[in-house]
Length: 105
Image 1 (tube, helix red, strand yellow):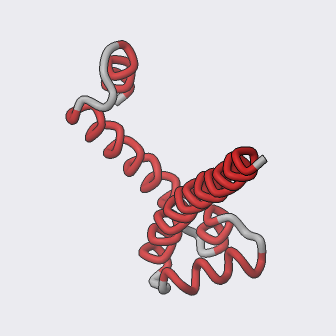
Image 2 (cartoon, rainbow, N blue to C red):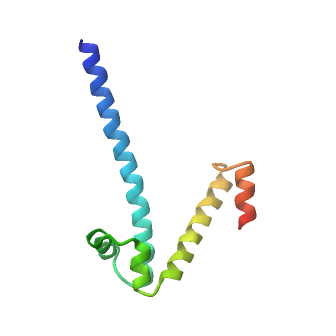
C-alpha cells in the first residue's frame, strides 16, 4: 500500500515538472517574438507582452497594426535560419535534414 502511494506521488511530481518545462519553452518563444516587435515599434518588451495578453492578439497582429508585419516576418525567418545554422554547425542537426536546410538557404 505504501509503495503505491509513493508511485502515485512520484507520478504527480513528474507530471508537474514536465508541465513546467513545457510552459517555460512557450514563454521563451513568446519573449523572442515580443523582443522583435518591441525593436520594430520602439516599445518596451513588457508593453508588447501586456498588449498581447490583455487583448489576445498575436505578436504578428501587433506588428501588423504598427505597419511592421513584413519586417516582423523577415526577422522571424532570419532568426529561425540562424538557429538552424547554429544547430547544423554544432552537430545537433545532421544528415539529410541538415543538407535539406542548407539547400533551402
